[in-house]
Length: 275
Image (cartoon, rainbow, N blue to C red; front, side):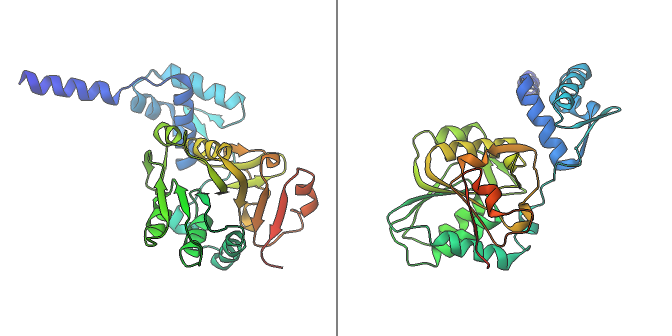
């Protein structure tokens, strides 16, 4: 009986690991991104901290315009778009994403190392790579969807970053993934995004995944964003990078509000795969 009580206590303390303020705030933002709204009482119970602590965290995030403070909790700011599931996104604008992937494929050469970020368009690029005549490739990814495509080709060396698994995206992120990047360098990185904006730059939905993308950008010689036209003039919650840090953005078509000149002024080449 004593051993059972000891085990239960250890399990309780493991669940109630104390987060620092930064971790709590990222936890709150991720919850809002997933659900659109959070209650102070729910977060307090889930993290085993006082309601006053969570209330202060929410007010500080509200002062930074990262959420809207409401009675008893917080909700998403309407200008920030929310993520849809991978299975939903991969069925949208398939033809446009295929054209983007074909254009991206033309920039990959045999005997090179490539990073493929999580996302529905990078997933289609992975399928294009597997069916191409490219040889002696090394592909690094944090997406299990992409890994499942690449593993079908015995001639490609596959490196999976590891980390915390997020079911909605089948992605891996967090400190373990970030640490595993330390000694990995790629010739070219293809990155996803939740939104593209000339002021906010490249943005995405989940903090841990954004941190992985940031690190891989710093470990890739060339940085290419793959984004269909629906991503332009939109903002997700977290900034991945300024536009000036990107070499190229490949899209399917360029709308009137997303002229190449605007992006050229930021030092990035905007390419449309469909004329």
